[in-house]
Image (tube, rainbow, N blue to C red; front, top):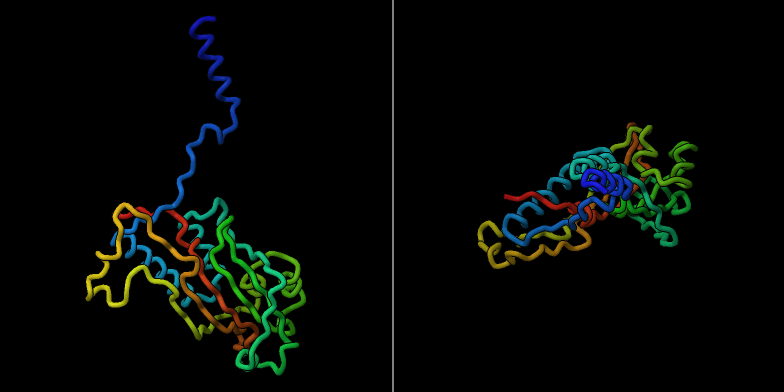
Length: 229
């Protein structure tokens, strides 16, 4: 066979291979354990924290975050139900929601996922009588996030607890100079599973409470490789 014929044969052989056989292997996210890496991680955690506190919908904030940081090919948030872990509301929750007994509430626990990444876990106690029949159907039978299911109520959030569960920098780091003793140049920053927590009451556009949520935001919100100076 001529040289031209061999090249033509090689071309058709490569063209017939599956696309993934020719692609470069995906690189795992790597956060360097340096001063810049720790500062960047803290800045991003606090940025997401502030955006959530200022927003009417955690779902929409997480969807935009997923899009901005390319956490999945399709930046769409779905609610993966976690069943068999019902949690009874306490007296303070009943009071905040303006109900007399726990029988007036439903409990829903979900993992909010973008692709395969779990961005938050949420406990939700809500008053089904204050939702429409279609909203209740969506919450009972689909993976629709709560914020999207009840969007027609024009809800807003009243956050009463916002707690940082992990900081990559010690308290008063800017005054003590301890960052240098923490970092491991060449090493990877160890990011724990849970980063921060919110507790909030959701109210309708007419200010009626209808849900209380407890949300824990997870390490997967940082599941990308940062470009650092």
